[in-house]
Length: 301
Image (cartoon, rainbow, N blue to C red; front, side, top):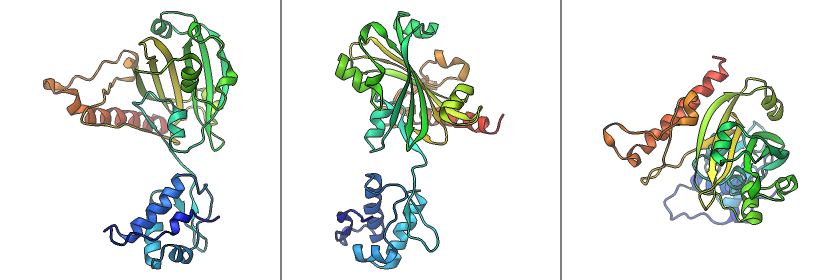
């Protein structure tokens, strides 16, 4: 398969950036744009030398960098190939759903609706909506034909007349809420926990019972401040990474022990230090706690 024609364009030899860095960046951009699918063979070292007009040592450095990043694979006697995606990333603090976040990176996320029907919610969900008149939506998300996440979502039935499972096949729930009902997801709160897969989740996600999963639970409101969704998503821990953006303005990070997750309060720094000054430490502490729990689950502790 031929590379994008832009890859053969002359490198900027006056930019100060090393040539091997520029070559690696050109290949990286093509791979990440999905113009080169997993398993696609790249040209030989000699072919890349001709395309970029550089020495073999430059090409080897560029390829070595991409191997280290997990973007390509190299085997003796064979041309380098594009590596399959081993893990995916999700921004924890954003109200956009998994579908939109994956779409923004060019990753095709498949969605199968397993269940959409009126159902009586658990007490905490009923309290959130102020009603027991709710819809229960269950979906399985897949990437490259492998299960990635199982999603259970509670929705306010009275506000979503006519919502059908067909609307949500390989589609974004949030997009449907906006386009069909004029409901725009707004503020909310998300929590992360490491849990073991029960029999039902293990079957759906094609893992062994007790396998570690990363569970993201959240509640969201619409643009009017009304309760819109309560969701719980179980992700395969080896296939997804949660990312947190921290800026000087600060993200409000909430931490709680597993038993108190439903009643967590904002972290209050000692000495009254503003939240923005401890947001990075809080984010790191929360993620480290989740990773430690995940490690213990893997070790069977």
